[in-house]
Amino acid sequence: MVFSSNVFLILFLPIFLICYFACPERWRNIVLLLFSVVFYAYGAPTFILLLLGSTILNFYLVKGLYNSDNLVHKKLFAGLAIAISLGLLAYFKYANFFVDNLNAVLGAFGLEPFTLAKVVLPIGISFFTFQSITYVVDTYRNVHKPMERLTDYVLYIIMFPQLIAGPIVRYCDIADEIRHREQNWPEILQGFYRFVIGLSKKVLIADVIGRQVDILLAGDLLTMGTGTAWITIIAYSMQIYFDFSGYSDMAIGLGKIMGFHFPENFDNPYNSASIHEFWKRWHITLGIFMRNYLYIPLGGNRCSKPRMYFNLWIVFLLSGLWHGASWNYVLWGAYHGFWLILERIGLGKVYEKMGKSPSVIITYIIVLVGLAIFRNENLTDAFTLISRMFTFDFQSFIPIQSPHFYVTLAIALVFAFIVLFPFGKKLQNRVFYTDFPKRQHLAAWSISMFLLIFCLASLNATGFSPFIYFRF
Image (cartoon, rainbow, N blue to C red; front, top):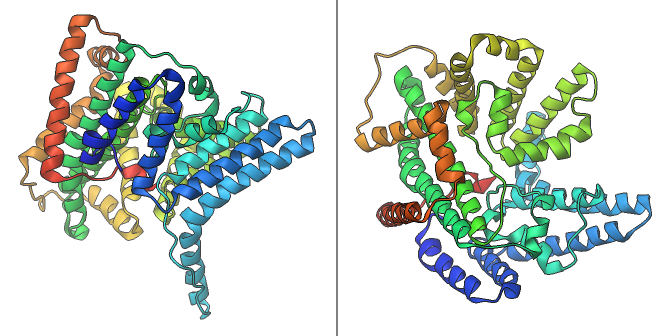
């Protein structure tokens, strides 16, 4: 089940909200837990028992960790819990990738290939694995004591708003709200507005642009003109941004309706003046996870410069591999790591001298080249698209016969870059982070209802498309 589907919007969500708010507060966690199980089982019924079983096992291992006074035993419990979580992720996400590459090597030496039945990837496994790890590590570090009730911990892992594609919610950020949270109508309404904004980003912008991007990339890339190549990759940058940030907005909005405060996951990333800044603004919760649970344990900045550069490289190689079991994702991670190291060496000072606007343009171009690698699992196609971007062949430009696409792309570009201007920043703060007076709530409610109906009509006309990050 996905948020941008009629099943969710017309059936699941209204029934859930009625049951949730009709129950006394002490029963609301149970209602949320039961509906979360149904939500996941609807899309992946064969994996729900695996998810629940690994979650329950993790709960008792961490309980043993917390109750033990022996440091060796603590490390043993923590190591076992992390090994189980990472082991499941490695098997389901990377077994096929490993076997395919192993067989390529064996084939080069004329040896028999190794056979393995195709492993199906459970939906959202990366996200609930990372949240399990934060629970183990935060408890081990005494950042927060573990959950007392098994149902509370299972709820933390399987809560449906952020289960499938994040944000990655650290245990210490939400632990207190699992048991005690306050709900009020202004926050509930703000959550509803945020949900509708996210839904509109997905249905009215990302899906419209994405359909045309798929058509363009399915064509002959070798004959693609430079203008078409740039339109294609710019359009894809808008598609993936509005798709993923739209999901995050919907998750944050649903959480706020229920009294949870999930962390922000995007902060206008294409306005960044460096790749370092880009990763502070793009998929923020993944960046925080990588910093706290990988980069800092490796030594972070508290080491020699060569070791620091190595740490950055490792983090981004693994970040790329996290996105998918394919070499293009590994290369994409290495590509971003390369630019981060260049900025540490001296490129960052060059950006400072150039000023904000030129730095933003250069950074956006660097990101676009990376997205060409990210989008195409076939590396030949990726490099062909990049080469067509820089051949400056404008004679073979073929106009895209879709005014709807161009209008939507223009709107996306405006919203993606509007906060570069002071009025844009004020507008964003007003819409996302300000409590409205009663009259403005009426206007916001009316606009939100109009957008919601418009999105439902669009879904009925075109069907739904899954979120890009569901497969990660």
